[in-house]
Amino acid sequence: MKLPKLFRLCQTFPRPVVEDIPAEVDRQLTKLNLSEKIQPGQSVAVTGGSRGIANIAVILKAVIQHLKGLGAEPFIVPAMGSHGGGTAEGQREVLRHYGITEEFCECEIRASMETVLVCQSAEGFPVHFDKHAFEADHVLVCGRIKAHTDFIGEIQSGLMKMMLIGLGKHNGAKVYHKAIMDYDFSQIVRSVANEVLDKCNILCGLGIIENGYDETAQLTAVAAEEIEEREKELLRTANSLLPKLPFDEADILIVDEIGKNISGAGMDTNIIGRKFNDHKATGDETPRVTRILVRGLTEESHGNATGIGIAEFCLTRVVEDTDREVTNINCVTSGHTTAGMVPIYYDTDKELLEAALQTIGLREPEDARIMWISHTLEIDQIVCSAAYYEQAKLSDQLEIISEPTEIRFDSAGMLPKVREFAT
Image (cartoon, rainbow, N blue to C red; front, top):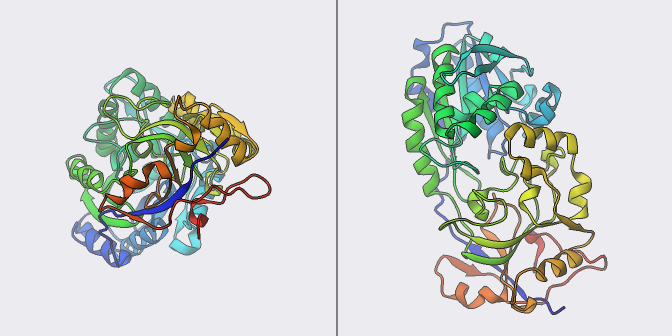
């Protein structure tokens, strides 16, 4: 099979950056005058999520230091639904991989899957809340705000979602994901989050927004009573910074790694164009990708291969690195069962690519439109096939780094990672 030539290009995105994170965290929280609500000696539960948020350990440490400066006794609770295999130790391990440890953050981490039944929602299902957080005098919700991988609306992934899915632990996540299948996502988020705001001592939120380079772009502290309205504004800001792939059509998208630290869906469907259908873009959604090939699973995922079912092809090593129990728990809990399905897999990149190229229609393999990325949090550096070369030369948003060259497999039939291509 004659394969297409490949070249490297670089994309340019807007790049606001928080230069001094501890200082900005302190400045944001100071604006809320939390000393008016916190009495010396009172406990504050601070949420630690399972997403690979840039600088998250530094951010949480700065939150802890600010609270200590007010005389509070802060601690961290894992707020990640069923992630970490649905166990307390597993969730503690997820935090450790992000550098969120008791030693670094200088506070206790209280990990438990036990929840308190707060009330019944208006829709008639139980509202769960982390036991340690519920027993605290205050709860500070810290999380990234961005577009959700499955749902649309004014409220998507952010502080309100963390108040139900994250702090609801496995018990709550199971209930809420079921409810979302019967009701609108936005309705369930608002319904549960408002009960939590009313009954669970929410002190405030700290919203994190990232730029297209996976860097901290903005930190915003929000009073508890303003979270819903402010989160709408913050989501609009986050969406304005959302990066995208450089071309709207592709026969093949190669992804070096997927993982829960990359996205809740393993790979961000807002980037790959499959938000509403695992295997096809719908409506005016872009990019429109015919086949996705996955080459690896991040170590930080601890075997959770949620999202592998969005791909049509993968390497055998991805299947071997998958912890089926952990993956099944996550996919069943979320109700996104197809996300855990196993694609067609091959031992080598050569076999993988040649098989996929046979399924793209009448286009000859050497003319195939291929985009190749590290993962969906890192799409500024991309390798593309020669079919895009002339289009790339005309764009002032793209810089061509290398000229088209033959695909080179090593002696085992494997490709390097994107970062190592043509270097």
